[in-house]
Length: 337
Ligand code: FAD
Ligand code: NAP
Image 1: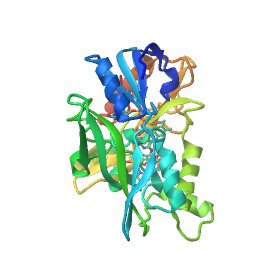
Image 2: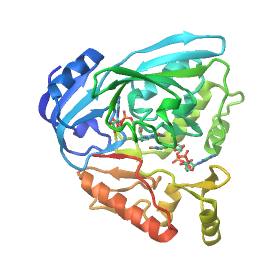
Image 3: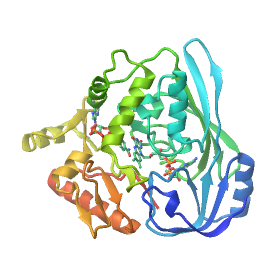
Image 4: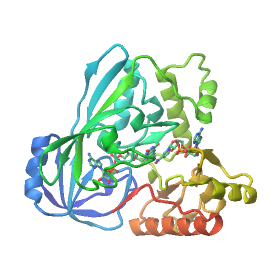
């Protein structure tokens, strides 16, 4: 339950940025967390999971608390569904593997997303046509101000595209303790993404299964995305922008190859990676330390020794050049500290 002074966060963020926290502590249960919060008092505080969606641009002057609450259990079951509750410190992919092995359907498309269960509601993690909100049942979170535990239903989380109430209205107000998912016993597979269909074919899969889809997703991700254990990165640095149909129609005339998907009758989602690539950034490296990944332009990388500020400035330069070329403003997905 100790708070350690002047603690390096380099190994605790997947960008591998060398910064320190003035104070650092770990907790693996609510009791320890409450004791730590009493000690911390009114200091600035940040909760850390796997550190795979953060960019540190400076030393943290306050306290960083690492969530290590573990445990996975089936808490309810009926003829159609299984309700699985996981501690916020459980590694997300370990939860996926637990469900895949037992044939519980719902999160196989979200295989191999780095980070912990507790951060999954923060940006309503999503990949290959599935978002957390599709399987979310409820969560428990500690109100930092009052020290009481509050339950959040699906509606109360106000999930959106890479968004939730915890990134907006309740920013820095709650510490997520556990999440319960509602998974299917009778599978409803989602193979709407072309890449999944292609991969299943390449794997020679004749009949769909939770495991086959998970394996397909794992193969695609391993072939396209840099492994943070080898190259520092935080996945997609930007969100895919959603623009009005009129704007899209104009862009389509000018840029025939533009990659876009319908959101609703009035909006289109553009592939931010394509916009960045067309703006000339893909594979660019700076000072042999950092740059834009050579296979996936949405991913900024730290080859070693870059500062958070260098990566932040690069992201700003990308935003400016995409705006100048397409009139579209990219928004950062990664949380900046
Ligand atoms: P952290 O980086 O530790 O924290 C992220 C934010 O959540 C911070 O603001 C932190 O303060 C807050 N937070 C963390 N835990 C808690 C808690 N218990 N209570 C309250 N606040 C908390 N994301 C996707 O959505 N889809 C993808 O397909 C995807 N692919 C990725 C691929 C790679 C290679 C990488 C590096 C990242 C990818 N990401 C993806 C981003 C990232 O993995 C997810 O956003 C993940 O959920 C972050 O989890 P984390 O535990 O690492 O969060
Ligand atoms: P991709 O397959 O090259 O596709 C590019 C973008 O087009 C994706 O980001 C996706 O948007 C969109 N897209 C593709 N097919 C679509 C379809 N059938 N319907 C609607 N939208 C479609 O993408 P990728 O970079 O390799 O990533 C694959 C998946 O993993 C995506 O879902 C992506 O979000 C996710 N991913 C996320 C992160 C992260 O850090 N957030 C990192 C890596 C991968 P969406 O992003 O809206 O799905």
